[in-house]
Length: 269
Image 1 (cartoon, rainbow, N blue to C red):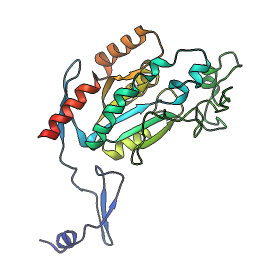
Image 2 (image 1 turned 120 degrees about the vertical axis):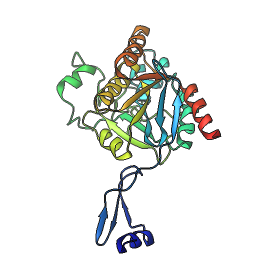
Image 3 (image 1 turned 90 degrees about the vertical axis):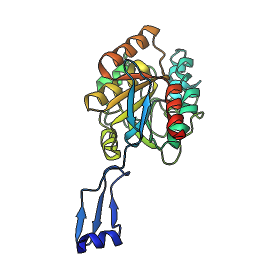
């Protein structure tokens, strides 16, 4: 054994990097960029159109926009006169799924719409999307009841619904477009985690969930839509088209019960 190898064996050195997938070790006279990746933890999940095997150490779940503005009485969707209750459908299955994933070591990433108060990075076309006639309650405007500013970072309106617990080690990413990847650090975080496979959940299935999933697909990630952990206030055909397109072009579709059952089988081994 060389002197360097003996020194490494005696001292673990300083760890440089986020997570455990891609790290360097540093000593006063050397930096080791060739640290081995952790051994895969394989789990097979029943999916459509094919079953999928993922590595739990390289898988995350992204939960998108489960926020008061979309899912709660007094939020923005409710103010607009839209029935927000469909967007609450993912709450119960996520309450069951997220603790199981955390226990299996799968990171939970909350991707929530949280604009700057000054909307400095929001171009007119995005503001128009939610205030098409130039009047009314749009991005950043106070809601008549609570006074909370629509989808503004740190406001009640943009907060995750109280029924879903966020734990300290969960990762939170603010987004400013329908896709969670545009103008955000999400891709960098995923790559530093060593992510290869992503489970997708949240609202709305046919909008922010779909377009975050398609961007992830274009970036090379394996994408799995957890259908009962997603919802939308759009007509039913929008969900049908989204699921069809995911299975056809962008990834795979499964349910939370299938994931929980598969993880239980891994734990039993």
